[in-house]
Image 1: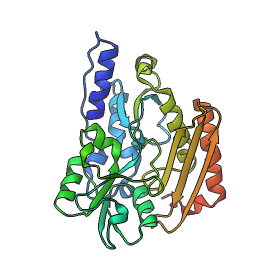
Image 2: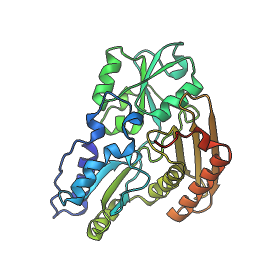
Image 3: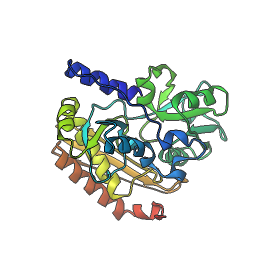
Image 4: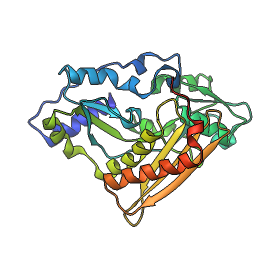
Amino acid sequence: MWQARHVQALLQARYPGTQVDIHGLTTEGDRILDRALSEIGGKGLFTKELEVALAEGKADLAVHSLKDVPMELPPGFMLAAVLEREDPRDAFVSSQYAGLEAMPAGARVGTSSLRRAALIRRRFPALDVQPLRGNLDTRLAKLDRGEYGAIVLAAAGLKRLGLADRIRAIVPETASLPAAGQGALGIECLSARTDVAGWVQALAHPPTWAQVSAERMLSRLLGGSCRVPLAAHCVARPDGGLKLRACVASTDGTQLVEAERSCAGNDIDSAEALGREVADLLTAQGARALLPTPA
């Protein structure tokens, strides 16, 4: 809802004479909280109901956390804009410990992400990493009740909701590389709604759009979803080009392949080519052997 209101405010500021209404929906991913996302269907769980509303004309656009958007949209839908990225990193939240490295063997760490779980298990195998679902308030309440010694979640969500003071430490990328699209917001609309796409172009942030395009291309080629412990993070180089780091892990964290490459261009075509190159490097190292077998 914060994301929807944020886009509403941006649109109304850009087009003062326009009324922008929010049509609140609860997605399947919001409703099913007793199982890990990897067990119930992956990224489409957070977009399907919104896409139905678009198709039925009940909504003109949908606002998503980009990391929750499937790498390939259904026919008839398009990603109309990507907004400037918030902090893409993972945050360590705890009232007992200063960081993952300070937690004793057997201490319980909660996370909703298969990627975070696998990478934390790899770097800190003595910790007890357990699934943690629910909205942000629910997850923080479980931490505060002592059900977990710490939780790890996206820094962007905490910062957007005014909860940055709960962040005890930012998890270094050497311990938990971000997910593709993490920290970025995407606006989706029907492909036929060129009018809507034109309106929201004013909100787009080209550098972020290029960077997440590299990440999403790599993830698309490797079947990235909530069932795959895959991380990909693209940043701008000082010379104006792009650098993409990515890895694929086994769910238990015991196996990992990683790769990094740069390119001179910084447009979407260059970014997607970079994503393909890094995906090929990971594949050459055996990444596909770590991916789950399709059901």
